[in-house]
Image (cartoon, rainbow, N blue to C red):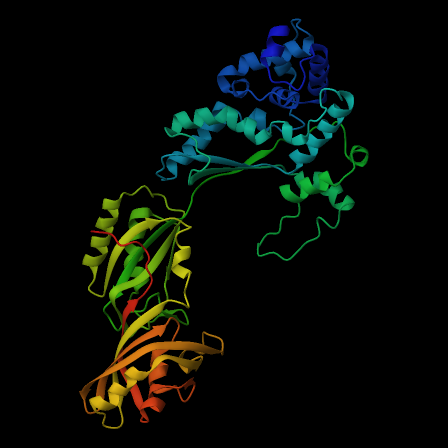
Length: 502
């Protein structure tokens, strides 16, 4: 027995203690892998498929003290600590089911991550066994906590990971954006945890949550309740050994998921009949398409996402053109099936979008990280925008009259929410700045207005006053009724995303 013991990473090197602990674990109903877990074994090869025979032999030898016993495997019943997860679901049949699901999902990926959701009752079962082991074999478990025992999910991955990697042809990566999610469920899990809510009602009190389905027994609150329970009370109120499961845990779901991909760029809009996003009134589409749809149609075809979320650095009205270098935007492609595109692929997508319509033009199309998109919203109020407008004046104006506008620098406005947007925005008064103004006469009643403003300034309302809701306004400054006929955004002064040389 000396060789296998000293080659292993057990919590003890004492042969007699290991044999007694093994016999106790086998006799109460632990499977082979759970015996090794509770003994502290962390060498991965003992949990892998091609080592299964030697693993069983090791447990047999420990159980019998080196004699030739009847195989422990033949005595195994549904495991009381893993609920059969390391028995039924560490099999060629189950890994084949996972591989089939992944391959038929349509995802393209270069690495993968496998995550498991396990029944919460595994925590209370394991803690019961751990307390008894620590009491009976105090020297062996001195300084050892629940967390030092290899977790069921880790053992499952040690067994199945190499098989999945080989079959999928890609390596496992903890930071992989592609994830295989496997949910195991046990019908009586909540009932087995219910004694904890009697002991700690404050921990399990239902609180307000944004989740539709509120989970009473989560891994977090169950672990917290166990750590708050005195060992003597725990042993008194929970069974040891844990009762044999009336039925095994089941695999409830195998699903694939890919992290969101973020695509940024800048867009110009040349139409005065095009909204930034789909415009719906009482469920009826007001316009045939939108900036969002013209861009997302191409990206959706390439990336095949579950959803396409569009956001931009502000927005212009339907009848306002977006000129200059364009307005920065970002698109979140939720759970895309394809994502591994190169810079030249983005050039092709950009060309495809631009050739499909004359209403918009996009540039600098590129992939960005989630962290980078915060730059789109940072400085939302501080950034400046430049506008050009064709305006009308009730009185005849000379160029000399218009030249006086250039004397106004950092003009402070107080703007109440415009009447035209009151149906979708709360009533409020906002202070905004007009950094600079200039005017150029077109004819006796028309002139071109050039403005540099703080982001969020309602330019149309600054010109006509919105029945006095914007003060001061161009009409009060010029001392004549003014109105705006056409408005163009000339620039949005945000240095994002990075400019590409394409």
